[in-house]
Length: 274
Image (cartoon, rainbow, N blue to C red):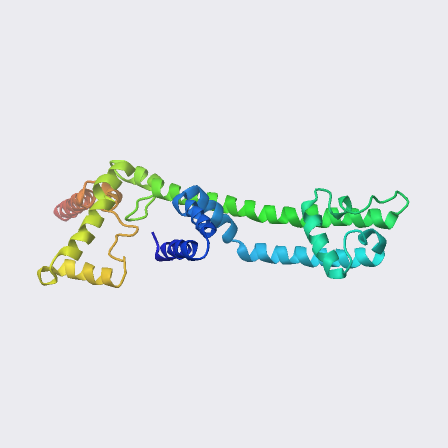
């Protein structure tokens, strides 16, 4: 639990006792801190806060322009709703965004012969209620999709890649004798590395070996270069000859020596014949 969250809860607790008990209701937002699902919802909104805020500002500007046009061209229709331009702007912003059909639903019905008013209502509905509002929804939905893809990629990386060396499961299954599961549970068992790091933190520095001193210094610098990234003992042994160590090199040397002896015997037989 982070200090900011505890500090905010403590602040509203004190304010609820000193000022008004209604402020204690803010603590219900603690559900977001306790639920990973709600944290994703909040993250989807806050991660694109700049884009959302700019879109909202654009919506306010467009509503302002529609208010200017409406009060100038259709002043008689706006007289029943507001008496000043500022009141008309606030009224249009409030009712135009909340009304399903736009501001035209809140104004007196337009006559079919009033083509200007019909065009105004349709443009407001298309630009505000269909365009800008759906843009806001689209930004939030895209944020959810990006969070889902990021979570799936992280889970797939944890499931199909060695945590220690970073080699993928397909490569380990093809190039090692026992495969990915044996590699991650025996050769590069990540908890062994964690235990070793914890062991170094608890061990007396004066009792370190040379290798332990080296690893400890890297840990203090937050340098994880002592991890065998891209390297594995079972992978190397397989590449050298299916776990047979130096067997391929030995067989090649034996073959070369046999060929050399054959050449020497052939040369010797030619000298004897001459």
